[in-house]
Every structure is written in structure tokens, then in C-alpha cells.
Image 1 (tube, rainbow, N blue to C red):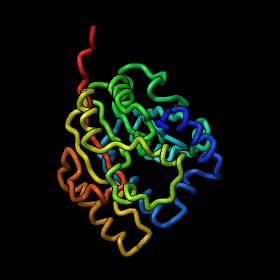
Image 2: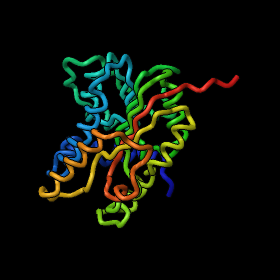
Image 3: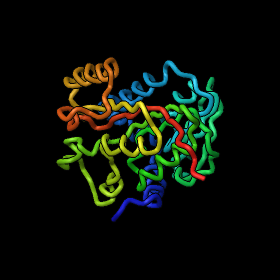
Image 4: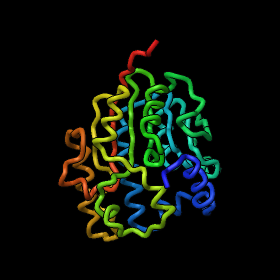
Length: 256
């Protein structure tokens, strides 16, 4: 069956949010998950560290796993998620951060005004949007001219995901059926006015072998020290579990 927004909402309300703590279960259960969590957090920190934003829209915030770091760089954050269950687990400790307004809504029909944000952030959530064109069109609508873009999403060309070595089910396969390749994503983004697009690896070599983590860390740091390309190199693509696209919004003229 096709991926639908209602299916995604029900999945997280019933399966994930029912767990004691999403952050603990998803990111801190195994050493490998911890490594991927900190790789993602580090990539976000590298991208945000020189910046200070007025208003950030975080799309698919879940229980606020990444929101504290985002809020430390913003005067105000709109944190949106389709799952009320996930928002119910939202972290309350945002001391020292600007105000965070939590919104339970499908982003493609969210009650946000045009030209709201000077930064749009979506971390590991875009793959759950059935209509990528509509989601990115909404990003362009709510973003101001010159708004910064930061999207982390899963890579469908990742070798482990492709060869089916991860435990799965029909339900999970449907949930993860919306993954999009970097070249397809950047094509849609350009169509909606996003420019200066750069693609980098975020999580690499999904492994529980500590001996490999040192190599992962070196490759991860190199990905941010050297100029990024508009897509991932072919030789590295099968080893990248998730990637990030950064860019800026150049507002297109509105049609009469």
C-alpha cells in the first residue's frame, strides 16, 4: 500500500509514542544508535553554529530530540509534528532557549503564515511525507526570501537498507517507502526556489562494531571540512545511511 499521512500519524501515535521514552528507545539503546545520534547532532551543530535566527520552523520535530539545539540558535521556534503522541513526550527542559510553540498538524496543511521563517529545518522526517512536492512547496511558502534550509533524510541507495538485512515487516516497509535520493530531492528543491544546495553524509556505515567508528568519525568530519557537492559521490552513496541538504531560499515571484 502507498504511504499516507494518516498511516504515519497512526504508526507513531500507537507504536512509538506508546514506548516509555522515544529518545531512549530510538537513539540511546545501543552503542551504534548513540553514535548515529551524535553524528546527526554534530552535523546540526556544525550547520547552525555560526548563525542566529529570528524564527525557525522545525518540521517533524517528534518529541523534541533536536529542538533544544535549534532553539539555542533562534529567537522563536515553531515545532510541528503530525503525531500528538510524539508531541506528548516533548522535552520540557528548554532553559536558556527562546520560546518553542508546538503545533500538531500535517505540515502540508499547517496554520503557518507565508514568509514566517528565516530557517527551515527537517531532521529525519521528510521520508515520511507521501507528497514531497507538496511538502517542499510549503517550505518555500512559509520561508522568507534568503531563508536557510537544513534537511536530513534517509538514503534509499544505502546498501544495508537495499539488501534487506534489517528486520522488517510489511508495516515498517510501508513506513520507510518514502525515502528519496539526493539528486531527486535537490531537483524538487530547485524547482521551488531553493539554491546553493549542498549535500553531505550524516550517518555512515550503520554498524555496532566499535573498531569501525573511528573511521566513521574521520569520514564524517571530512564531509564537513571540504566543499560539498550537489549530490553524494557514487562510490560513497551505498555507505551513507542518511544525508543532509543545505541551501537558501530565493523566493519565486507569486503568480497573479
